[in-house]
Length: 322
Ligand code: XMP
Image 1 (cartoon, rainbow, N blue to C red):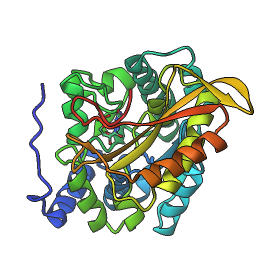
Image 2 (tube, rainbow, N blue to C red):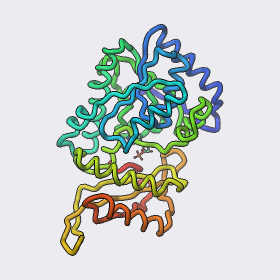
Image 3 (cartoon, protein in one colour):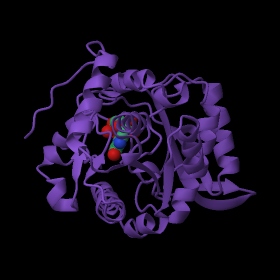
Image 4 (tube, rainbow, N blue to C red):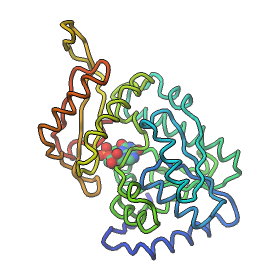
């Protein structure tokens, strides 16, 4: 197994780090073309900027619209990067992802379905189309740790799992951030000139909203959790927390609406205090905040009759529910 040498946020000299990584990317890609997928999160945003510094127009940046992103996300990310002079092409791959998720309930199988669709199908095609030989991606050390430890198969970890991307997908992967954790990446992103809304952005997992649906992630269930997520992010926007999320459970419970029985949906709210995602504790949200949130969820999201707040720590919980 490959050992990765950690650079802690305290040790990090952002200027030196950026210089080194830009040189490394230039050297590896040579005069060729590379591609990368931008999700808008701090990791992929930092990689996009490093890649553009190193390769300019020879880095093709794509936003993969996988149908499991949050409300308005594709347009919002494209416009943030347009403002800083980076062109991002949106690829509509909604059907591919939703088809791959059909009938899949097991968390690891869901992750695997997304991995295969992303790297083999969608990226396989983009590599052919663009003539790229390299993919730049924002894997960080926490992704590697948890995958290697067998906790969660993060969608973007290969080499440490003994998978050769060249043999499996037909291109090489460059991971400039793999020595850093989230706090280090935020420092690098700030030093790269990204806006505060990006370098401070709350993490969002690769498997997107499908990680927030327990059981099968159908189009209808994604729409439901997307609505809940929108409300939750609006209500908690001023809360200082590492991450918050709405999770749609698979089991239903009996509720009552308009004097009639409603066998309804359950939403679990999670809100975490954490520094680097390795350990986390639930944020002590005020009961007022929770009540307001619950009220909006049961009135604005069709079918929701139960709202709970997770109060367990990580470990033994993990931050995402699948
Ligand atoms: P967990 O759930 O492993 O999450 O405690 C730790 C942090 O990593 C983010 N994240 C992911 N989580 N699959 C995940 O389960 C992924 O591919 C992924 N990418 C990022 C997660 O949102 C949390 O911040």
